[in-house]
Amino acid sequence: MRDLDREETYLSDRRGLALELRDLVGTGPVPTRSYPAPHAALGYGEGHFAARLSGLPDWTEEGTLFVLEGGYDLGEAAALSLLAETERVQVVKVGLRPGVEVYLSPSPLNPYRYLRFLLLATGQEEALSEVDRALLEERKRLTPEIPLEENPAKFLAYTLVERIPLLYAPFHRPLEEAAQSLFARIGKSLALTPPHSALEFFLTGLEARHEQGDPLAALLLGEGEAVRLAKEILETRVDAIAEVPAPTGSRLAQALALWYRLAWTAYYLALLYGVDPSDPEVLKRLREAT
Image 1 (cartoon, rainbow, N blue to C red):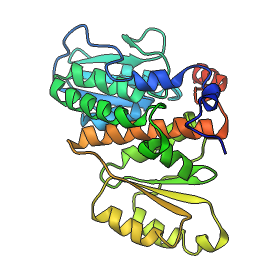
Image 2: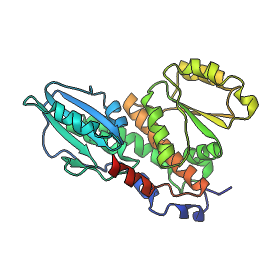
Image 3: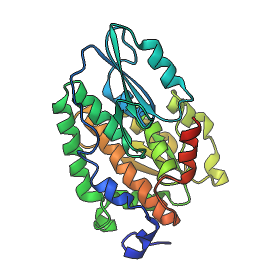
Image 4: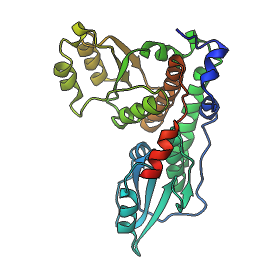
């Protein structure tokens, strides 16, 4: 197996995603004007998680509607932008398509950048400062120069090699889909998320699967009674269980800190598989088609 503490393992990172991960905090566009309240946000593709995290409603009849055009929406974002545009509602398009007001280059790390823009645009600078502090604190333990025994992202990546992550974040369910996207785009790895009634699914859908050797690894994100029950149920139903407690802070800062740690985990997982953790060319062609 490849060694994450050896320099040659990182040759697979041909486009330098580790540098983007390390320097993520503080990157992305900033508002150049004020946006009238009330605010709402619709998110697609890369922007979906940010819209959910922001706590903003997804529609408004007045004020400002931010449409996060993160790709893969098959024209829905443009259609809803036209529908929303009235004298009372200002539509602000943020994303990777030509003609948007606020442009971002495509990246699997853009959820942070979309959220940063939303927080600044809606006057939530203190919330953003807490998020950034949480990510910087996480970064101290996650970068490649931190050895395996002190690096939780490296350790978790080794746990997931040749296994399928089963993601459960009861304190913030949108984190599951966001993590699933990270493992797909960066780790080039399939990950599973449970339906809304997760504990019921664990209890019945995975019954006796362990006896057949299914290589599932449950990632329990956060803490609380739901996590405790999930662990109790899954101990006899999956190949391995990894508990990933959230750091201290607000719900928003906790969710972003966990997302950031899983981004590093997906990065190391790609290296263990010997593949480039950056986006493949086929995603560019898919964005152009949609």
